[in-house]
Structures are given as C-alpha cells and as structure tokens.
Length: 276
Image (cartoon, rainbow, N blue to C red; front, side, top):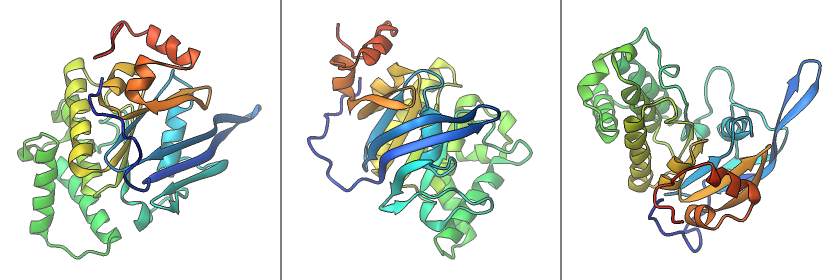
C-alpha cells in the first residue's frame, strides 16, 4: 500500500478533468456498443490515479479517450482547461504534446528496424517543433542522456535495436520517449503487465518516483490490484463501463464501500500493506 497520505484537498487545479464521458463503438450488425458510460475523473499534479477492473470493463477505452485516440460519444475531457480533441493522422496538436501515453506492449511501441537513439531523437525533434523551439544537437543529446539516466538506463543502450533489450528495458525506453515530450500528464495503459515480476516492481517504483520528482499527473490502467495499491494515490474501480467506487487508495483497499470492490479484493490473496 502506498504510504503517501491522502490529500485533504487538491493543492492545484486539475490537469485532467473528465465529465460524464461516454465512449462507444459501432459493431457490425449489432449497432453501437457503449464501453464507457458517463464517468467523471480528475488528475492533479503530483498524483497517480489508478483505474482498476476486470478485462473488458472499459478501462483501456477510457485511457485512449484521455489522450484523444478514442473519440468521445458524449461528455467532455479537458487537459489544462482545453478540450482533448480526436488526434489528427499526421501530427499531434502542440497543446496536447504534454499529454502522453505509455502502452502495454513496449516492443510494439518501438520500431524494430531503427536504433533506440533514432527513435528518441525523432520524439525530441517533434516535441521541440511543437513547442516552437530551435535547439542544438548538443542539447538534444543532453536531454536524451538525462531521460535515459532518469529511467534507470545506461545511456550507451541508445545505440542498440529494440530486440537487444529486455522487456523491462524496452518499457523504460517507452517511458523515456514520453518524458522527452516534457509531459504534464502520462496515461499508462497496463504498463507492467507484460513484464516479469522483478521488472514489474522496478518499473512501478520508477513511475511513482517520476511523478513525485517531476510533479506530473499520471493515470495507470491495471487489472493488477496489488500494483495499484502500492503506487496510486487515488483509485477508481470500474465495472461495465462505470466507476462503482472512487477514493483515496488506502480507504478503497482497507474500507471498500461497493460489493464489487470487495469482490475484487477478495480475489487477491495478499495486498502489500493491506491489513486483515
């Protein structure tokens, strides 16, 4: 269980505001399927919000809507007070560059034919252009070295191809790519589920440290309740497209109010730091 004390009141304006958000899909021969049914959520600087629930409950649909990949069918999502609009095919709007996503499969998010350094340079160049900055190659190298060290990697690894890295290293590279965009919010969709147990702990600890050090906001989507209990400040429990419970993580895990939350917790033999 995270040992961070729940905040009595948010110290700042939210970075992400979700109001009555609806995500639906057209299913051939079956009309529309509603994956997310009118949810509300806020994410503040320096906090991790965990969204948990069984597979198919709508977690990933919401995550993709938070960054503009999925189009809303109703409600609104605002990032720093501005609406999150569907992403264009070619280039992300400059105002949404600080809203980044880390996906479940680190290998799928990397180009196997290009060295890590080329992929990091591409992200750095795109982010600098979006911000209207003119910076030098020396500054680019310094920034790339800094983020690699920040995520716990030897900068020399940037000369390798993705297949030469472990799963944990590849996920750290994916996180480094997000950091090069100088994010205010990172949405991480099952960021550790594809990793072995040792890598899961290390990457989970890394995400907590990044939020604390950089004072960014983070949303972590996971079906692993123990991971969320360890690193999240607040937890939202999703079932069939709705949040059945939301609150400070310690309260949700030690005094759950909804039967579904109690059912999920009952399926976990031992949560870190959970009593009883």
